[in-house]
Length: 141
Image (cartoon, rainbow, N blue to C red):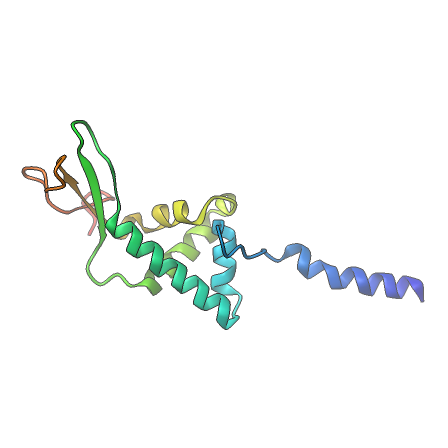
């Protein structure tokens, strides 16, 4: 009888050993993906809300590019939706399980490269001469 109880208790622990713990404060790629796929309404809402907020932040951010105070700014191609970004992110994490422990924002950048456009701005945050929106992944559009 003790063996049956012990086996039942251990079997009850097995799913929790394999389940991805969702970190709502600073999610890893694996944690965010778990929220996106677990089927609970609150986790699905967190997933889409997190991705929507990240997308808004990403499109208003810029990063250093070159010299003399130049910056690179980003936007998504026309028609890209948070749902599309979510699907790209989940597929990217599924295809690269080795990155599940990396920060979700970093992996979102990598996953969305095919639909991101960039432009170089001068030190006054104006488009640099002859600069126009260009795809991050070469000539793909």
